[in-house]
Length: 628
Image: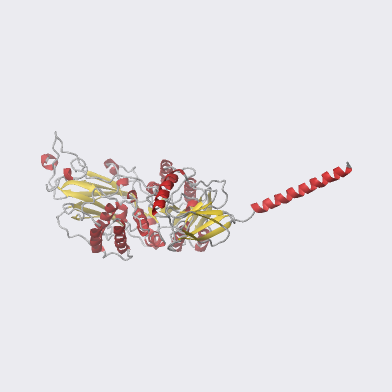
């Protein structure tokens, strides 16, 4: 009996020791540090790097995409299994037992690849990575990019119908906001440089034209803006006229700009992982930091699963402190963008500078998925915050999951602007070369209204600006929000005009209606309605000075002499508009062609100090080959 008790006690002691040891081992295993693995994925048949390969931790939703140079970085557990997949290539599973871990993928035969693409197309719509608070590791998560075989990517663009021709007898006024940026053009460049044409809804003609600056006359007197108007032959339909309206804002030397209160609002969620996302954000903001003055201030707010103040408001004189805070940022987690915006406004208001430049600079791919994330909710949030006097500039990054439509809403409602940063040169253009026009407002709620003379104009069409149209009565309504213009900023609008010379009628145009049976609509049939004037149109502009709530009015009439002695800037802007219409396969592209775009653009290279216009010609040449 005693022997039995001794044995039992001994056995229990051994069991306790075993359990304790097992617990310690399990605890030790749980405390094994994360293993960072990186490498390059290539086409095994050619050795060329592969972009857009999804690298997934097997059995989890965690994944990253390879960069244009084929590189990837992923934080996982040592010896976990990684899966490398890309449409058109054989999927591979490899153990993460070393770093660097370079992988070659074998291309599939065309028949097999097409079949695989069809299967994956169905899966992309229903499978989305889901990183929540349960995944505490610093992981990256984005929808695998479907960039080939005609697959649909996770990028989102707002659809719109092009403006059509209108008759001034029924629609004598055309009214719109000048809230316009160049994001669509930079995004197009990203596609073309990767060997693809952009989606048609990604092409906004007004943003193509306004990506470039033009040599318009500078404002005179007390007005911070000035109108100029020019007319010439329409290059994609020589029977039509083209009118270019230009607005130039007053230039202010950088050293004379008011003190700035910046809040860098940075998306550090998993979808921002990578050199061309968070890596490019860091490089971009450091360029801006280099140009801060002692009187400027910067705070940094980040958001992923949660929001955080990564840096309290810091004087511009402490550049290294600001840069260190930027460099320490890492990506991982979900995307609580709405909460981040609210915190950024709170900090901007706390450090508000009276008569200063109070602005949030949001850096994101727009993929909000936690909290306020739908378009209407974000629109209401930003519209309410706009009253604080804090502006919102939106810088878009990334590919594969880029939410362009959401970026547009944020920028338009936040009294700010929207730029797409596809490389460091674009970041330098937006944040350094065009610092004043991007980040300091000299005129707000800028609206244009054009009145057409039906004795001279049979019909007209505004090229672009579909998302910025206003009701005619909004022009004189000072409570109606509109676009802002920064220091030195230029805005360009183009109208295609069918002259009232009887050579062509609106009924000849695509989508027109039949002549009316019970009334006449030709100007000659309504002489009592017409006032004799040689003018083709009159441009009216309303703006408010920052801090004021009552608008001021400017007017500029145009008499068209029918000639074609136009400026080089006119020719270049018309070539850019033609290119945008070709990319959209517009109903109104007429006899436009890539060859004609290049020929006319070359006549407008006089004003090209930074080389952007010559780059445009190279992009058109590349796009012409992709479109064949």
